[in-house]
Amino acid sequence: MAKADTDKYLLSPEQVRWICDPAAFDFQTTEDLKPLDGVIGQKRAGEALDLGIHLRAPGFHVFASGVAGTGKLSTVRRALGRLPRSPVKPQDILYVFDFKNPKEPRAVKLEAGKGRRLVKDMRQFVSELAELVPNMFDNKELKSKRDAIVESYKEKQKKIFRDLESDIRKSEFAMVQIQIGSMVRPAILPMIEEQPMAFEQLEQLAANGNFPERKLDELRQRHQQLTGRLEGAMKEARLLDRQLKDAVKKLEQDLAGAILDGWLAELREKYPDESLQEYFSDMREYTLENLARFKNRGDRDGENIPAAMMQMMGAPEDEFIEWQVNLLVDNARTNGPAVIMENTPTYKNLFGTIEKNGNAHRQLDDGFHEDPRGQHSPRGRRLHRV
Image (cartoon, rainbow, N blue to C red; front, side, top):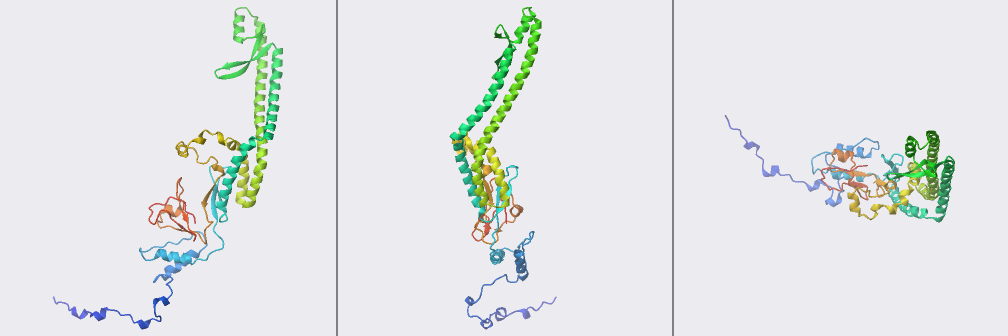
């Protein structure tokens, strides 16, 4: 087989060396040039990126893919930097307690910066309430009115039993207290020779012929009638107890409500957002129903237990947590659109998750959100919001 002649394909050093002709450029040094804006040879990619970041319709996303080190991230950052700074900031997103449906918090959107102010105002609200309510219950005027109400209802109860006891005595019976275990309950017994006697004893005497059977039957009939009246009196007394509690509760709520209305008027004026007006109304009703929690704050057994011990015991970190506000997204320092730079675009990182001890995103002054776990975190376990 003939050998191919490859010598004719050999190139000289001058042929493989390319020399740039300086005369081809119309500048003296590279300092005279403007920085390149874009990616060399990626015109379509640049146009697609510009289209994607300027779309304002929901449901559109941009996904940049390519070989590492080709400048994808820097290109995207430059494109985002060209976005006009909108005078309208993105809203803050908060969770507040739903007093009517405790299992589902209520999501609220407020003007940027109002979220952290509401958090502060609600903490101040609870602090003032916890200080005021115990003093309110020690108020002399309130105590006087409360004592008058209690005395009025107690007198009604006494009259019920005085009238009953009078009729019992006229029927030759007596009302006594009987110990049953640790309980004491009233009982009606017949009076025999000016002494109360149990029916078991009378039945034994009648069986021995020492007490008339006819008299025993009459006593039984009268006892049944009087026992019915006693049960009615007890029921009426329990009803008066409930009415007493309601009357005292209303007295306390009327006083506390007048104070609450003043504070809530300030909050309503400061936060006229429609989403918060119903929240303030529900909070007022819930607070008045739970005044005792503020009243008895200093009487709790766990007050002096160290915080670490209380956590081990499962005690709540904040005893008034229902009145607190959870600021989920704070855009107070955001300038322009809020953007999350996610270096590990897993499903959880893109769509978000919520867990008990999740980390929060650190927000920068330029409006960008960065992952606090570093550049190469393997997992995403927080709620991402844009």
